[in-house]
Length: 398
Image (cartoon, rainbow, N blue to C red; front, top):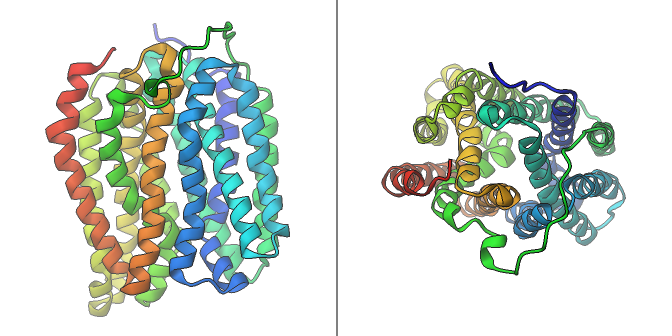
C-alpha cells in the first residue's frame, strides 16, 4: 500500500511555493522594461542589474543549506519568506538605480534561503518512497506560477497599468503565501551537534559533476525568462509573448504526468537525458526564429509557441529528476546541502544567462545569444552521458 502523499502541510507548502513564485514571475518579464523606462538603462546594464539578484541568491545558497541542516528549518524558512516579501515594497520606494540594486541584492539573498528552505521542508514531510512524484507536484506549483505570472505581468504592462500596480500584485501574492507557510507543520528535528566547518558542509562534493551539467542548461534558460519578450519585439514577431510562458508551463505540467513516477522507479538519468534532448532541439529552433519570421510570420508564430511547449516538457522532466539525483547522492543529514547545491548550480547558470544575454544582445542580437545557449545545451548532453551518468550510478546512496 502506498504511503499517503497529500497531507494538509503538503498542500499548504505547495500553496506557499506557488504564491511566492507567482510574485516572482509576475515581475520577471516586466523588469527589463521598467529599468529601461524608469532609469534609462541599456541592455548590458539591465543584464547586470537583473543578475545581481541571482548572484546574491547563489552566494547564500551554500550557507543556507548548512544552516538548514544545523538549526530548526521552519523559522529560517519563514524569516527568509518575510524578507523576500518585503522587498517588493522596497522596489516601489527605490528612487535611484543604486537603491534599486541594493533591494535587488537583498531580494536575491532572501530568495536563496527561502527556496532551499521550502525544498528541504517538502522533502522532510513527504514519504521517501514517493519523493520523485512529490517533488514533481511541488515543482508544478512553480510551473503554474510561471504560466500565470509572466502573462499577467506583461498584460498589465501592455494594458498601460503603472509599475506600482505590478509591484503591489507581487507583494499581495507573497503576503498570502507567507500566511500559508506559517501553518505548515514540520516534523520534530532534534538539536544536533554542529559539525566542524568543512567544504562538504556547504557544497555536496559528489554533486559537482551533475551541477556543471545543470549549469550549462540554465544559462539559456536565464536568457529566455528575461529576454524572450524583447527578442520577439526585436525580430518583429507580433505575437502575445505572455503566452510563451503559458505554453512553457503547460509543457511542464504535461511532463509531470510521467516524469515523477519514472524517477521513483529509478529511471533518473534516462528522464534527464530525454529532457536535455528536447531542450537542445528547442534552443536551436528558437535561435532560428530570426530567419523563419522573414519567410512566414504565421508559421514562425506557431513555432514560437511550440518551442515554449517543448522547453516546458524538457525542463519539467529534468527538474524533479535532478533534484532527486542530488538528494540520492547525499546522506539524510545533508539534505539541505544537497538541495542548496542543486539550486546553486541552477542559479549560477541563470545569472550567467542574464549577463551574457544582455551583453551579446548589446554588441550583436538576441538570436546570437540563443545560438550560444543552444551550443551550451549540446555540450551539456555530451557531458551528462559521458561523465555524470556513470558517476551517479557509482556514488548514489539510495
